[in-house]
Length: 140
Image (cartoon, rainbow, N blue to C red; front, side):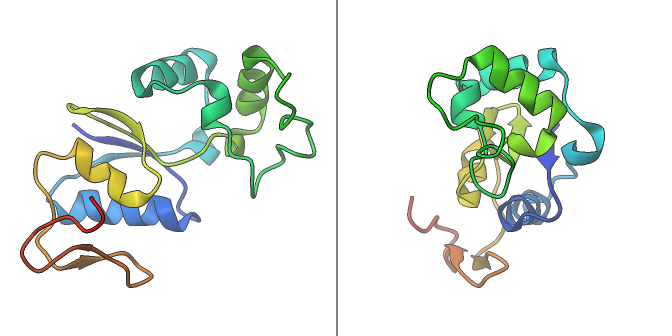
């Protein structure tokens, strides 16, 4: 089973979902902006992905600066509370698979979590080649 914590308005998240689906998987898609987060859920995801709340914080295109969260002295507990209140503060997409949990930025990072890849050539929605015509990963 593959689970993607997805934001359909995010190009990176859309590209990751396309890669997963093109590889033949039918992932569980969690629209975290609608579903929100719980503290245990975030703690589990961050532990599995070896991320701190600071590393998972989306600093741009989010209210992080307005909320004063960019200050390095802000505690992990304060960041977690803010992420629960404002789900957009969590960087995306986070993908869970039998091979592990990762924050998949850039989008081709998801290939590390898949036991099979899409047939090549495969391009991101913006046209950037991810997998060549021989099935080899570009920029590995």
